[in-house]
Length: 176
Image 1 (cartoon, rainbow, N blue to C red):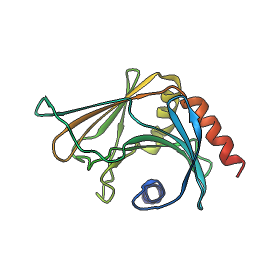
Image 2 (image 1 turned 120 degrees about the vertical axis):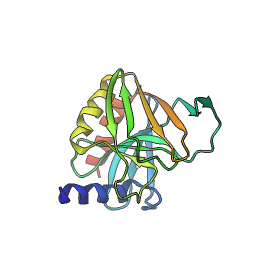
Image 3 (image 1 turned 90 degrees about the vertical axis):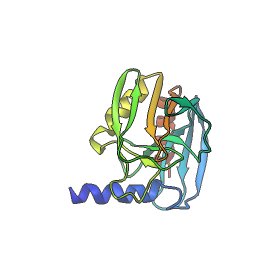
Image 4 (image 1 turned 30 degrees about the horizontal axis):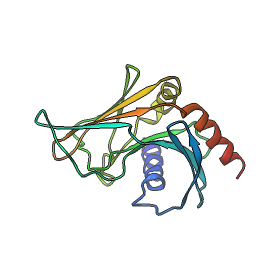
């Protein structure tokens, strides 16, 4: 368990923009997804998508919010099949899991148990491949999360381009 926790914390430092000011290079776009490559060691590639629609509810009422960067990413690091991460753009209420639903199939995403990275959520590493396969086969993903201020946030992502985007990211990293 300690080895898994250490690996997750290591990955957090590589993926979290505030912790690693690494240079990302945009390789291109595929459908609604951006293909990227991290140029500094360790080099890795991946894809990221931004929501096509977001709704914000507090006490059952629609509200407007000020939100930072938010995206769903799949990073290809060190020979993995991919690591899924969600950047919320706000501190996530860690008392509620984040839920990703892909064409009716749901998976839990979890926040950092130490509370050091407050705006990201990830699946258990054993679920990454299942989520990636669902993203490849699906047409839409919905991520539901709750902010620490009590706002329920629902993000909708188009999945157009996920499969080809991952292929291109993998090719880019193998050509490094």
